[in-house]
Length: 91
Image (cartoon, rainbow, N blue to C red; front, side):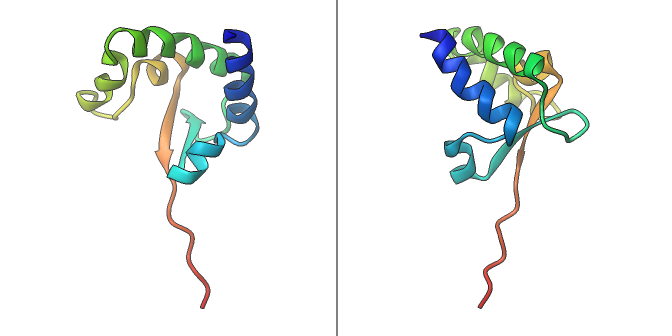
């Protein structure tokens, strides 16, 4: 089951930086130099997310005290989540 779940996230993170849900929320995973993450970074990110969520979400809450707002999986994989601007509507 973990292989299938990683396949979904790994595919989208390395191809576009966004899963379908991330597109709706206008967030994107990028490397520290603002490029798409590598397959290795996606593996690290996925594996670290498991304890980050399992330990009462403390790995995600870590972003509240980190000065750059990075969670454990961001720190471990040298990546970050960015908020994309709203597209301008043409009238």
